[in-house]
Image (tube, rainbow, N blue to C red; front, side, top):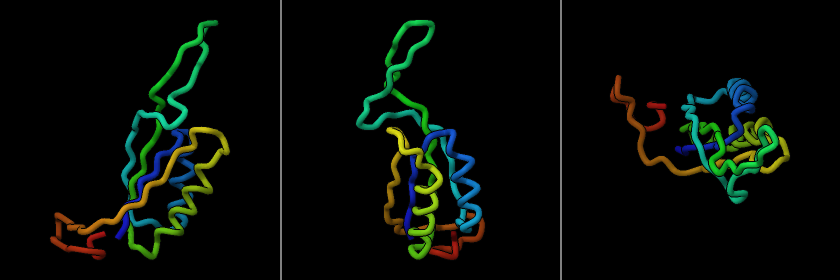
Amino acid sequence: MKRITAIIRPEKLDDVRHALEKVGYAGLMISDVLGHGKQRGIIQQWRGERYKVDLIQKVKIEIVTKDSEVSAIKKTIIENARTGEIGDGKIFISTVDEVIKIRTGEEGEPAL
């Protein structure tokens, strides 16, 4: 099993969610997060004054899925979150050793 963690632009969330529904993901968690990548923030202007915003609002999507579904989910996120501009985000894929469904006690892939 794998955990796919995607950090994307907030305005792309609806596009990504609808596309994931079409490919049949198992379930997901969404969190609002703040952070920055290599760009170390952005310079914005408001009422003629320039200021630096070093923590940028992003959305974190987490999906735990079967190994066989990773490439389809990864491709879907990339296709629907990409704008081609700096700050589109990142996807991290890591191994999940164990999953337990609390309600039923199921373990492993059946718990997904």
